[in-house]
Image 1 (tube, rainbow, N blue to C red):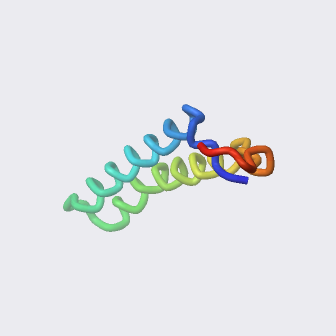
Image 2: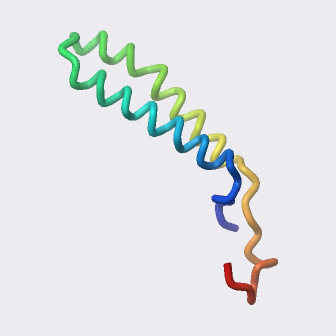
Length: 71
């Protein structure tokens, strides 16, 4: 089994994670107190976890059907 990277949803989920990480980086470099940073980051961490779960649950490509073919 391998990830179906040709599925458009695959890259949409990854793009969401990239956007979340950019926001996390911006929050970390801000001058806000640490507790405020932590609570601002929580929804982004939850979103990343949700995106990773969606990626994990995507239907994979069965490699036994691809045996002998070049992709």
